[in-house]
Picture 1 (cartoon, rainbow over the protein chains, first blue to last red):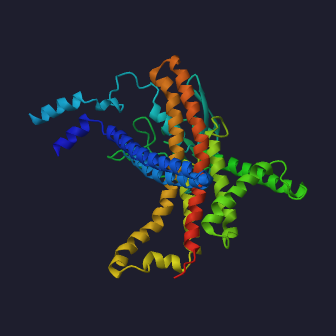
Picture 2: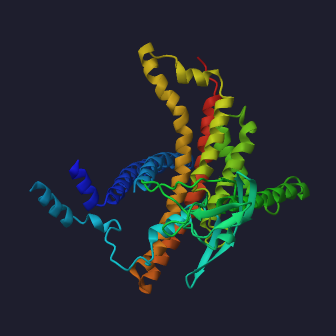
Picture 3: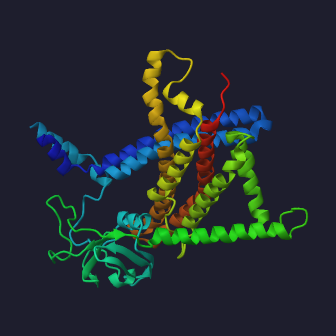
Length: 79
Length: 358
């Protein structure tokens, strides 16, 4: 218990919020990269499908991004 | 012993690089980035335009309060830009102070302000019911006015045109309306029912988009972070949720509470998850728009603040370049966010009225 109080007084817990936001960005980066790569490959294979692929890729990216943004919001609240 | 070595370890680790723990004495008047950004992101009772020689210039907005003695109205300029509960405004035998952009009844004067705190530092003052036209409400009125102007003139331009060929402003709006119809409503809701939901989807798209764009314009009547306000996105998501729940057919509810085609223990396990899913969908809509737009504002302001953090004008070109770059990306992002909100709303509505064959 005293250790926690000690840590709270010595360390800045805001730092953890920043680290959390950074980790969320890493995860979202991997996810968006995979979606983008796959969409690019699919477009190269079938250029006539480009419009549809682009649309669904953007929507999927929004889903991945939302999870990262949840983390950012939590980090903002906790700091 | 352990504690001591831990302390040394902690001191060596550069943890306090991240925060603002190391505050030297006598620098309290220094530029506080966090405070400036949060001030911009949050709602306010006056529209702050700029500071000249430390004196704030702002556009006063009306404060409308429902108090114990009835309705009270006055302009926010009567608070003299005070936000720390020092300046008192008296109306109808009641005293009001503004503290952190909230209006309170004034209490006894103690430790420099008319605000009294509990042991935990919470404000004890009572609050009147606040119906003020705040910065966000003001910004929303402007966007509504703009939308009415744009779409009334669009509608008029069709009555003047020959054979329905778009003229004037409808050259700009028609492709967007067709885009929502062909790329959002038709594939998501289906040929049979899409017409009923088109007005809602179009309103959603244009309302979010115009507010997003207005947030990016960095001078007076615009620049409020309206679509990055959680109350705003909450209302829009709630409307989607209510429509989805009201128009949903038997199959939709069946697929949530007693989905066909899987064993009973699995049904019992999945039903609560699916039930929570009803609420998580609009909540994710809400958080996505809120976080995206707020994040955009925070990034641009942080980049501009770099000049004031490093206290050198030589950083200005880099800071300016990056903020222009991010602003251009944001122009794309705000359109995509409006599109995604509309598309997901259409998707949820479409899944609620979908007819299954089994």
